[in-house]
Structures are given as C-alpha cells and as structure tokens.
Length: 336
Image (tube, rainbow, N blue to C red; front, side, top):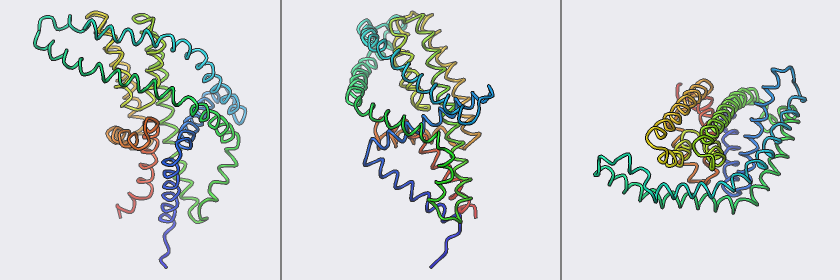
C-alpha cells in the first residue's frame, strides 16, 4: 500500500469533507442557507469586534458586545426598513411604469429619430423582463418568508455558540484529521479564514457605503422611493461585481425622469462611487488571495445555476475555498 505524503493526505481529507458538504447543500436547502448566513454573520461580528479593539475592548467582552450590536442592527433595520419599504414598493413600481409609459428617454434622442426607434425597441423588450424580475423577487420573498425565519433562528444560535466557543472549536476541529496532517491543515485554514474575512469585510463595507450614498442622493431626487432604492443597492452589492448591474437598472430608469442635467449627475455619481469601491475590492482580494474578477463572474453564474438565488451569495466564498485549495495543495504538485 502506497503511503501518501502528509500534504497529499491533508488534501484528500479536505477534498472529502468539502464534497460531503457540497452534497448536503444540494440535498438540503436549509443547511446551505444556515451555513452561508452563519459564515457571513460570524465574520461580520468579528469585524465589529476588531473595531471595538481600537477602544481597548478585547477578548470575549468584545465578542459579546459585537454580537449584541450586530443583531440589534439587524432587528432595528427590519423594524425600520420593512414597513417603509413595503409602502414605497408601490411608488417604486408606479415610477417605473411611468418611465416606460411616458417614454422618458424620448427627449434625449429628439434629434435622432432612427436612434430613438432603436431605443424604443430595446425598452419594449426590457419592460416585460423587468416586470418578470420584480414578480420573481416578490414571489421569492413571499415563498421564502417561513424559511427565512427558520434560517435566522439557527443562524443566530450557531453564530453565538461559534463565537463564544471559538477556542474550543479551534482545538477540536483538528481532531477530524490525521495527526500528521494537522500542522499543514492549520496553516491552510488560517489562510482561508483570512481570505474569507477580508472578502466579507470589504463586501459588507462596500454595501453599507453604497446603501447610505444612494439613500442620501435618492432623498433629494426620489424621496418617495429612497428607502427601497437604498435597500436594493445594499442587498445587490453583497453580490460582488454582478450585483452592481442589478442595482443600476432601476437607478438608470429613474434618472431618465430628471432631465439631461439630473441624468448626467446621477449616473456620474453611480459610476464614481462604484469605480472607487471596485478598485478597493479588487486590491483587497489580490492582497490576500489571487482571485480574478473574471473567475468571480463565472463562479456566480455557475453556482447560481446549481443552487438558485442563494448561490449568488455563496459563489465567491466557494471560489475562495477552491482558490486556496489550489494554491496550497494542487499548484505545488504541478510546479514539481
């Protein structure tokens, strides 16, 4: 019997556990949902704890305070946002229909009838697609409400226990692997955690900055839809790169009603804020793990097809794991 080297044996065990988890995710949607939101929640709470460290609050005290802050923000956000967003959905849909019915873009092409005709054709194709997207989102929210509360319950419990018993977990998890592989796996898990932590930190900060910026601007131009637009901007920006396009569609359509000056100002604002945040995101990901934006887009498309809507949030963390596995175990063998 051939004895595998320590590194190869470690790779076999990591791959085996990864395949097992992947199969469970395919079979049970709730397990996937709880895993993703627990992972994200754990990393966000750790981010808040890092900020608390600047105020000399450390150890378990910082974790407990960070947990309370995180879940307070979620509960307060739901109480504050959902009723207002529910009211504004009607205004949002009404404004979108007004844009299409009045052909708000027509004045921009008044001197070019042929181009206007082409734009009208494009918009005639976009309108039903946009309605389908809206219906899909609302239907998904309605159907997913019971699952959402189940996911939130288990996520809260797991997040609290994982963070409070992180020391015990750190000592116990290596026991799932052969003794001679534990040092290798410890280094691998440290790199993976750093990459995932950096990803969640930058993606959450980007989403919060985008949501606040959109709320401030929308309060000036679209006060009746400011909350729903900023909420949509925040959620879609949790999906790297691809989410920006979904966020931009309603903003672009709404900006058509502002006239040429308002249209230019709004779109320049959107481009500038996303350009800055994108540069930060790419540089952070390159610093901790060489993950190409093209691979991110491909990963989101593929994983979304496998796991549905939730796959869009799971795609990049999965890609980070695959990239870390490649760098740690596969690439060194190829280089030999």
